[in-house]
Figure 1 (cartoon, rainbow, N blue to C red):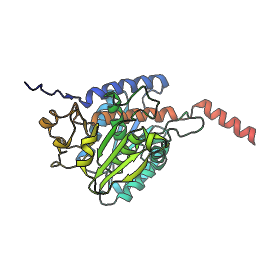
Figure 2: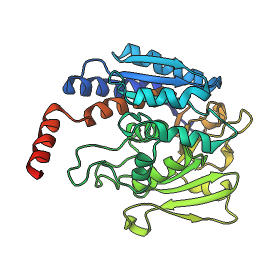
Figure 3: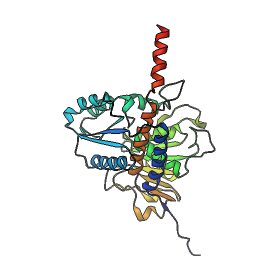
Figure 4: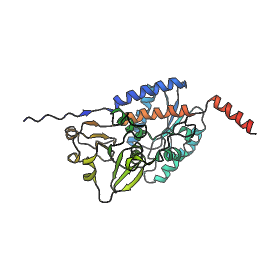
Length: 330
């Protein structure tokens, strides 16, 4: 009997980003803010950061946003950020990391220097705390101002929505129920937040790095409001890849390849590393869908976050009501 050849759909980030950018422009028109300005701070020569800055600038300018790239010495960065925080002409701020690769705490300090209302990357404590605790708004109980999610984890969620991995029949917040997902990367910037977001949406998520495997879930039957983490001693890729519906990899190494032979037939595979973590010809024989990069979707999510920051800002009527409330209480 002849073997039926496998078919794998290769989905390019550009096609997904295009749809997101259409939504961004529609939202921008609806709030009538004109041309929001993104101040972008580049204080390193990291090739990935430079490339991200180039993509950001190109996408901003093509979609009616003002992009203001500011190359600064890292020792002057904090003061420059403080000035941008109070600059009424700046709607959002992005900093390209890492700045101090050998000192993560210093980078974390810089993340906290960016004002909450201008943090387009969602990396300051309030946004990250909301994300990990599955709190989606900044202003409960009114729930009018949505919290900002980190751009690359958000981009991967949007890719999964585009691929119909999310089940729209289920309640919002539970739409990954029944899905098993492996994330190979547990960095504080992408891998760990991504695992938390996926688990908070109902998936069973295996988070893998060089230290081992952790399982992120909301408990049996997704009964908990937020995810919980369980160490899986002795587990490795051989245990998690064969049971995963989706495998997402972001290992920053040119030599690293996800072992194709461990994947189940029909797996959805997504690569967010700047290197190809999946063997191209082999993965097309195994996966049902393969997304080789996410960068352009990340930039689209950056603009989506910027528009959300603009929408979150108090309007003139909000200021008037605040003054009225203050006068009444006084």
